Image 1 (cartoon, rainbow, N blue to C red):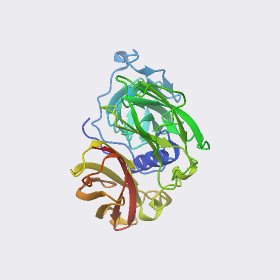
Image 2: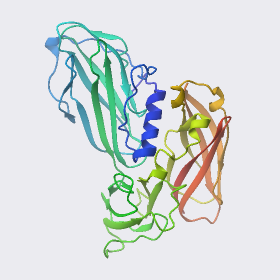
Image 3: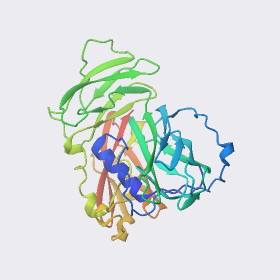
Length: 380
């Protein structure tokens, strides 16, 4: 979709929610008074009331209204979606009152959602317009729920839309996290099921797989125990990772729900005024001694200052370096995305002779501080 820009507040809300709640993006949209957060698309022409199509589009569910605007559908349910994929959906607004309605702005709950710019758009009685929302899926599995609030003039309550998808890899985990729904569980089980071929588990959570019941070594379904109590480093690792011989899913990261891996993780973000869009890179299968390149995105972060840029040199990237022995990482390029986001291209090279599961840490240093993300890979 052309003409998108990405909002600072939405992106930061998304990442905070990821830290706290297993990558789900259903946060609370910014309150009224927050800087503009919409993305820019060309306004569509109004549709006469007589031409309004009330048919429910595929994947659409229900309607929503705040008493002045009605939207069809109220939400889109995408079902299973691929990691890193994008999904554009069209909602239709209609003014159901006898007077004009002014839309002040739209506010998305996460940076993952780009929308039509409806800032200060006025709808005449009965007038309808299309509103496009595009959901960009993260690269880790789990339910992705994006909400968009339409803020309307006149003291009316916001109108809330939703786009929901389940980010699923060729091996699907149920649940898509460990640690329990409230983050207070230290032991449990998870089911891994292949959509296509049988697979073997190389390791799970940094140890040999501990099956719930005897199973064939190569199977489409594996029921595993997980344990966060015995020797698991919750201070540094926020992913419980399964490594397999599945040709399309060598690395399956499951988010750990725990107080240490939630909003308390990476507290230095408050001082350096930036954080990672996604704090993990799934590199899949790579070869020892051969460099491969990937991207990470860092975004401006200053919630205590309501997003104001008081440390403008936050975006001056000084270095990218591996913090894991036997792994080399270097900065390749830095590309500004917007005023509030930077894309960093980096390389990673396991030293010759390395093989098997890799859980590496990489540090990014800017003028205002250093942050760390993880690179997960299966090395040949």
